[in-house]
Length: 281
Image 1 (spheres, rainbow, N blue to C red):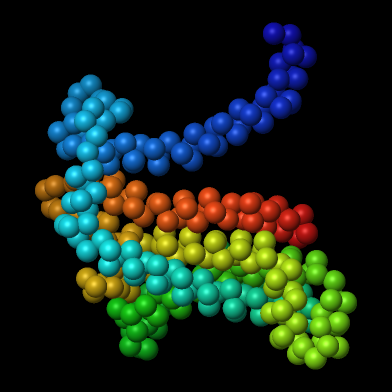
Image 2: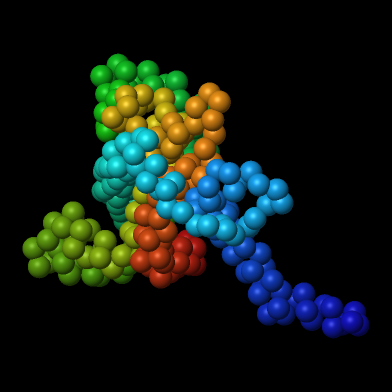
């Protein structure tokens, strides 16, 4: 291949296909491997040479995952915590984003800078203050012990996403709504938020996924067996001498499915929201 031919290859659509294929493989391979492992027996998993496809697929690991630990309870806890924190995050971030986008704030740029800076703190540095605060409030081993910090942790990114969308909505639409009798808050909920639906969906899914996947706070703040969330509950299948990979893989598949379904259903809105938000910002 000539120099120009190689240059055309790496600068043309083929490069985009190669890059896209690498991203897809990197994203899907771990999930596919977990799924295949969940269908194997323990004996097959340690057989040499390695068999990539299950020789005798079995669903026993899924049955054991639900009977050995209260997996349904873990799922319910995760749904409750992630759902509540997402609702609260959207409410608060919508109000904050609207204030930044519409009010004539002299320190607007400083506020945006502070929001970005606040999202850069490693979670491990916040663990002790959060734990002490929740203990002082008597909220340990409750849903609120996780809902409140998850809301705070998701607010920066959700606010930034919504600011870029709210700025793109013409002020005349709000003024017309207020002339018709809406308050400013009424104009926000009835005009601005519906017109910013892609951004709202994007912010909501980002918040939900962050809460669904979070492990450190869930492990530290809710130690009661009945209040554990899914990421923490999955670790309970391991014992001192046994690490049942097939059963753990089955539980992981159960944890991945809701997120995969959520992304599949709302993928167009999420991709549109991220793209439009980036262009408008």
